[in-house]
Structures are given as structure tokens and as C-alpha cells.
Amino acid sequence: MGDEALGDDSTSTFWDERQRITSCCSQDFFSVDIKYASERKTTLQSVESNGLVVLIHGLESNSNSSLSTDMAAAYLDDGLDVVCINFRGCCGSPNDTLGAYHLGFTDDLRHFLKIISNRWDEDELFEKRPIYLSGFSLGANVVTKCLGELGEAALTLYNIHGAAVCGAPFDCERNIKYFESPGFNRAVYSQNFLKTLKRRAQEQLDQHCDGDPNTTAFDYQRAMAATTVAEVENAFIAPIYGFRDNIDYYRCTSCYYFLPGVAVPLYIINAGDDPFFDPEFYPIEETVDGGSLAPVKLLRTRHGGHLGYLFHQLEENETSQDKKASWMPLELARFIRHVRDSQ
Image (tube, rainbow, N blue to C red):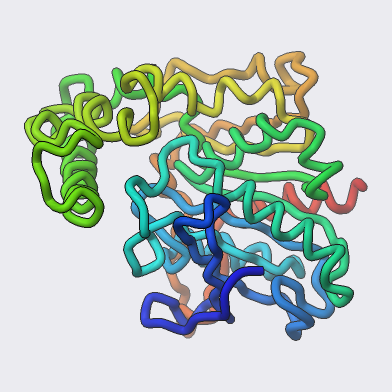
């Protein structure tokens, strides 16, 4: 499974336990947090669960965010165990190697799925129950891309029966133009994201490049001087992960290009007024409703912004520990329940 369970300060009271996982290259690590639907039977499985949901968070998020716990709560109510993968550097401790994760970083998810599949043979207590994937924003892209990469192997090798995600970016080459167009988006969202990327570049320089501004790992000077997200991704993200430039990065990682390869039921919910995504692009042709053979279902709500409809306002006498899930997580859980009941 990995290393021993951890209980450090970065783990919230929502989750039952944490596991530290050695990466596939054996040079880094990531952490996963687990919540059991009933009494714990063995690692990643409770006595009476109907399966396991592997949850993937968004950019600069982690398992402790309200988005992650809200989605987990909806699946738990349906009798599903939930494990949330914290991308490298998102668990409260810096990662060990240059880079961490990006828009299409499926390495850790695929490695974790392999660990699960191995345990069916290695742990007699660990029953082969259905696996489901879920995620939001960047996590939605990673889940969709991973399913497209795996194709039929998602079911045959890893027992993945379906997936449900929200806030999938589809085509970031299109989105970056809309995101950085003059107006409110550029003044508020784009500039905040730009600051986040520059902070990450500085952290990577300090942690893995000895603080040398002349490092050959990426163009630090150009990244710090960037005035747009595209410029900093071209100078920082692309070279770190081996892409030719930011356009190559978008084209190699955007989940739109992987939709035809999806072979298990996938539900994607996006909002028409999401300020991060080009509203003119909606790939209905890559879904069952558009005549595609891929078992992909899209729902586009008129409103919701970027994950805005995930939040749940506490009712009178309701605490954060026993709060109900909001509409989005319940809708995603409804789809997973439909998939489970149909098989």
C-alpha cells in the first residue's frame, strides 16, 4: 500500500486516516486520505461499502478543502468508501523532486490504481469491489484524461465502473484566450492565478534548484517577468514537464482530446457561465447525445460559475461535521449510484 498511516497537522478531522505513497519513480511521494463508509475492514475498504471512490482535487487544493469533503460526504451517504489523492506538494509537506503536478498529470492516479489492483491478489481481506473516479476542475481533467488513456483497461485491469466530475476545462488552448481577454476575467481571475504560478515557480527554485535564478531547469527570469498566465506556463510549466511550449502543454493535456478513448460511463457537469472556460466551446459531439460511441454524458447548467454551486450553506442547528452535501456532489453521486444499479 505504501508507508504507514500518518496523522500530521495537515490532516483534517473529516478523514479517518492518511497513507503516504511512494511514487512510481520511487523518488517522490504523495499522500492519500481515506474515509470509510462503515467499520474499517482493511486499508481502503470498510465492512459494508459498495465500492471505492477515488477523488482528485483541483489546482492549489487538497483533501481538506470544503470542495473535497463535500463531494466525499455525498459518496459516503451512498455507502461508498472515499480516498482523496493529494497531488505532490499538496499534503502539507513539500515534494522531493522538481515539479509536482500539472493539468494532465495522471502518473500518481495510475500508480495508485495499480496499487489497488495489486492488493486484490496480495490482501485476502481486500475484496474486489467496484472502483469509481471523481474530481473537480484540474482534477476533473486528470480523471477524464486518465480514462481516455486507459480505454477498456479501466474496467478490465482496474475494475473502474464509472466516473463523475465537474468543472472540466476541456480545451485549455481555447480557454487561455478567453481567460486572459481584456475585462473582468483578466483583471481579477487571471492576475490572481498569475501570482499563484509565480509563487510556485519561486518555491520550486528555492527547493530544488538551490535558489539559483540562472537555473537551466526552467526560465526563472522570464517566469517572474511574465504578465500573463500563458507566458509563465511557457517559461515555467512547459520546460519542467518536457513540453515544447505552453501550446504543446495545452494540446497534450487537455481532456477534450481524450474523450473518444473513454470506455466506462463518465458524467461531466460544467456551468455555462464559468469564467475560466470559453463559453462557445461545448463538445457535445464527443458524447452519447452527440452520436459518439464513448459513454460520456455532459450536463451544462446555465449558472454556477467555477464550482460555485458546490457550496452548501449550513441550516439552523446544522454543524460542519454533519452538514449535508450540496447539489453538485449529490448529482455526481446520483450518477454513480445509477451506474452501480445498472450493472
